Amino acid sequence: MYYVSVQESIKDILITPLGSRVMLPEYGSRLFELVDRKIDDEFRADLTTYAFEAIERWEPRVKISEVRLKSLIEGKLNIALVLDNNETVEATV
Image (cartoon, rainbow, N blue to C red; front, top):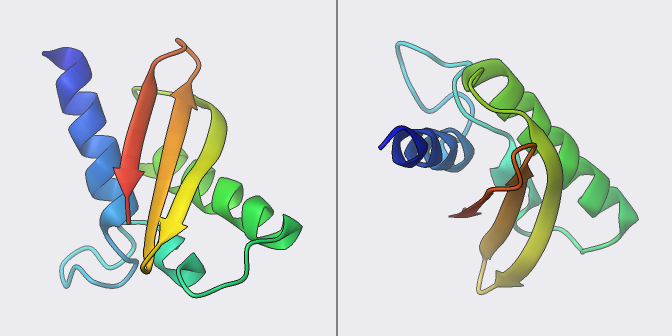
């Protein structure tokens, strides 16, 4: 049950655009900025940075060891986060 709550927390953080919550405008991630961008080295670097920043700030129970881009289809960014305990959390933004 603990793991499920961590997964849901991570997904919520990643799919929430910064500034979208009135009472907590700093909550969320910048991943939405990547949706219409060309996939290149800069895109991959930003993807990793944005995911690390958001999870490090808002979910202290886990540490990320890797961010993987699974797909970008029809404006939906599908990523997988590998945690330091080797568990994987997937999210679609």
